[in-house]
Amino acid sequence: MSDVRVRFPPSPTGYLHIGGARTALLNWLYARKHGGSLILRIEDTDAKRSTRESIEGILDGLSWLGLDWDEGPYFQTEFEQEHRRAAEQLLADGHAYRCFCSRDELDARREAAMAARGNVGYDGTCRGLSPEEIDEKMKQGLPFVVRFKVPRREGAVVYEDRVLGPIERRYDDIEDFVIVRSNAKPLYLLCNVVDDIRDRISHVIRGQDHMTNTTRQLLLYDALGAKPPVFAHMPLTLDLQKRKISKRSHGEIVSVQFYRERGFLPWALCNFLVLLGWNPGTDQEIFSRDELIEAFTLERISKVNSVFNYRKGDPKFFTDPKAISINAHYLRTMPVEELAGPVKAHLAKENLWDDAYDGARRDWFLHTLDLIRDRFHTINDFAGAGRAYFSDEYTIEARPLKKNILKHPDLKTWLPKLADRFAGLAVFDRQTTEETTRGLAAELDIKPGILINGMRTVLTGQLAGPGMFDILETLGRERVVRRLQNVEHLYHTDNTGTEPR
RNA sequence: GGCCCCAUCGUCUAGUGGUCUAGGACGUCGGCCUCUCACGCCGAAAACAGGGGUUCGAGUCCCCUUGGGGUCACCA
Image 1 (cartoon, rainbow, N blue to C red):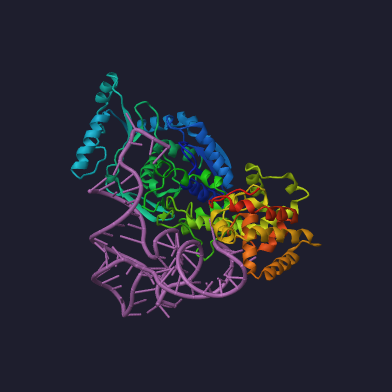
Image 2: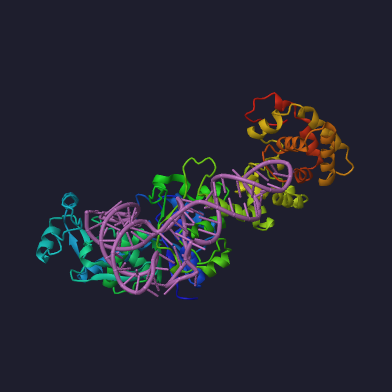
């Protein structure tokens, strides 16, 4: 076991979103790469907003993604005593002080500073209070918060960021920040450091939005006499308007759950997410788990924020096209036996699953998946565009209906005739059905395409699909004949799509 | 507004002073294949934010401008 210890500390205020998943993924990769440990810690000190459902949702999301952790989940609230002790120690050591300024006063001063275009930090009013003054205010029962006493000296807090390089921030630019609320509850900045020290965290890999926290927390490590971890700030994920993606403003599209429901393969999502702000320095974009763990380094994390290329209401792409493309790639190239699991789950959910697919019809099932997956993008397509392979109740889509059926009224007699010939075939396979189809087309003196595309529409409801004679063989004679003999009704409905039979 | 970070095709990105007439991927467009297609194959359009330096030479180093983002809570 190496001494690499990283953590993923979500606050349970909602579902797991892709930004959080990406943070978890990079931490997980780093831990796995170095044979270290990933600690899961639920930062639930904001009791008002933390919920049980949220915690479960986050754990569930991580599990689905395949990101396993080695310790935890720990709950921050369970260590409240430690946090308080640390605060008391800081107070005792002179690294912190009680501040009796009221919130209203603070707000007023901040606004004034903002208006004067100045620094809006705390002005240090209570920093110089004498012990007597403090006693006096304590006796009066005045509420107070505890503030960290930032060193007032020349110079800056400096550290070496593993992705951004040297970072520094002058002491003068850091205000005396609050570490304990007036209700005596310690705040994130402190809790987080105390927990990281206790959990012996070696590397903190988090978003750039934490950079101002890092410089302040470094001061805390120092005051607490602890060695700080290595910091690596990853770029943020923005939307097309360059806004930080968030649950509040982007909704379900940024939730991991959404991708699960829309038929994403978990690893495909991971593969997409890792590419948002990281690359291996080669042209490789598709990685197996082992390949990614091997290739991953903090140094190759980009400094630049990336844009999640998602257009609301896009008719063709329900999320970033590259994400869909990566998912489709996995869908089409993974061993079909591995694909069978997710597809089974999906078909079962849609009431299209037949236990025979696990038994007598296993080969048929796998063969069918292999045949139709080439044009699919998500698992959901199997019960969508691929529905006709698993059920007799499927929709004939409007476009092919109009183009391939309604345009040729004679198909209402041609297709049943073709069905009759199929029924009489000694052998029903790709070769014999093709000969039969082309033979009939020749007799009728029409282009084979009319028969073929008409069949495609009736048999699958789709405009596009695999080679027609592969479809016939897969569907099997019984279903093909039955469906082809029943086309009359297609001409009696409006052309917005209809159900056969 | 203060402070911090960042800046290559529409998007994700390669590029660590000369091999950059800037490479790849997704998307877009065109062609081929063909019974169809959001399959496959081939091809095209598409970027170094601007200005100063440094250097024999700059996408690559420095400075300024501009632009973008983050953060400034008794949230995490």
